[in-house]
Image (cartoon, rainbow, N blue to C red):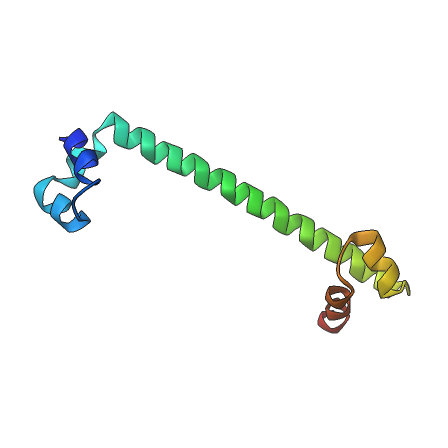
Length: 95
């Protein structure tokens, strides 16, 4: 029945499938569990990547704020960090 549910998903609407096949039967399927685990792993990986990117950005912004605080020009900071001058100027108003 789990296979039937997967195949029916190609042609039928979700509500119709739910009426015909019970959800708990699907959850017992090894294929269902494999797909679910694959989705979890993809979600974790995406979350890690987004977290790393956000952390890098925050670190660069912190360095830019510190450089501003010691009097470095926005142009020099842009050259050192890769941030746009407009972004650096926004950091001065958000500090």
